[in-house]
Image 1 (cartoon, rainbow over the protein chains, first blue to last red):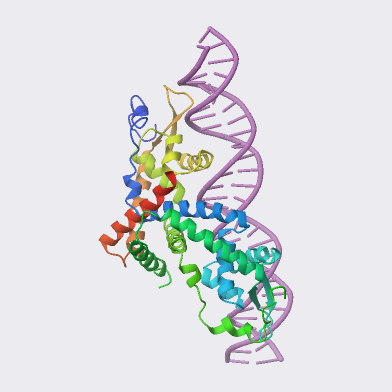
Image 2 (image 1 turned 135 degrees about the horizontal axis):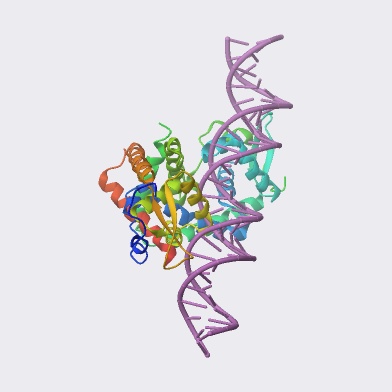
Length: 162
Length: 162
DNA sequence: GATAATTGTTATAAGACATAACCAATATGC
DNA sequence: GCATATTGGTTATGTCTTATAACAATTATC
């Protein structure tokens, strides 16, 4: 009514059987990134679920395993997440017995994070699952394509920091 | 304790000043997609906020503008979101006076969606904002690179449907 | 030594996404 | 034609991710 367009005399069937026009959306690279990300997130979430890991806890665990003694603030900075959100993640990892928070002698505000043996083991398993997941989803891409994709995404990512 | 690793005698400072090792994470293309997506989502959300649009309402509005009379179920399918989530989105668009739900005569279960005049206007403005946003964030990429990026992301996206 | 900055935390909220269950309307199969 | 299944939209609900403000304890700064 308020738009003055011809009402639904024939309009109602225009898009009924026709293919939906999505060029308006597809013109944006961001839309493609969003859709690809949703597919990846959904699949990886399901793949990690049997291990009791979520994507955020998994990412955190990798960094802790690779950087014994890392502080929470460093972890948050490197994962680009806010400190408050990290607390819940570490609570979960600690409760599962995969990570320890140890007081730092030289700065008693901070906690140093260490992965336990079982933490390192579950991390290894998770990495294997992740590799299989990516091998599956990226099977249509050549090695060189994946490398150039990574480089371009890195350019986009770094654009905000500058 | 439970992992038998040498305790924090010197370990606590290992990662204190050193650069954090994130090759373990960076080996995964999915991680780069996630980070790029986060940057894009955050920036676009802020860019659209003055218009009263969120990314989901914006995407829906584009498809409705480009496909007058589209049904909710078609919209949900094409946006790859679940029908229940679309209800809230359309409530918002309808409440703003940008979209109308009109009963379909031939199938009185369904609603045909139409953008109002102001809906089409705000959509035009939003598309301009989106273009500026992408021009800003993709300034490090050549035209050809963006095209090949899109093609590769499409391959990843389609992988789940098969 | 007062003030500011940092570390981790709590509380809180918004947004995106998914599932089950429901009603109304339509389609299907006999 | 009628019982049954299916579809379109809705409600209720839950989980996950991300963000912000405020706080206590500790350390740094001037």
